[in-house]
Length: 172
Image 1: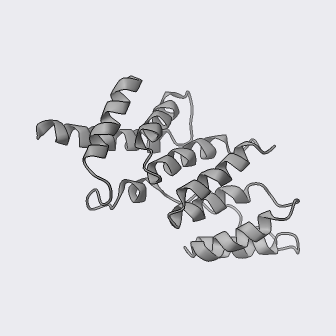
Image 2: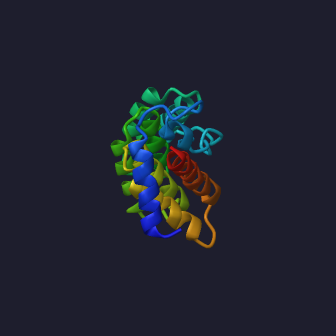
């Protein structure tokens, strides 16, 4: 599928309206899945106590508390940069896609290279959740076109959902 087709599908989908898109909720709600908690099992130390408290709230779905604690934790220059992916996901859960994207940008620009795939996918999710669907579909297409990508299936599902919307509109 070329860029022109992706943009046309996005336009057709946008004309279809925003908000609830069926039994699964909005496209944002159907696309966003919080990143898996890989932190909570760590040994508690004075240095990571706030991080672990934030992750406990994150794991319980209390994203307001998680965001507050993770923000506090990240104010420490020695904080693990990986906390930004969890803060971004908490912001997405709270409907703050632009704040989430900023956290992902910070992580991408840090010296931590272990989150390239996560940054690429959650940036796409940020774009979906901030009504930048054409941009999101281009990002999803780039993920699908990559040789190996952790979020290839999710990107394919996003593109397929928009192709289905386009087929429905074509029948009208």
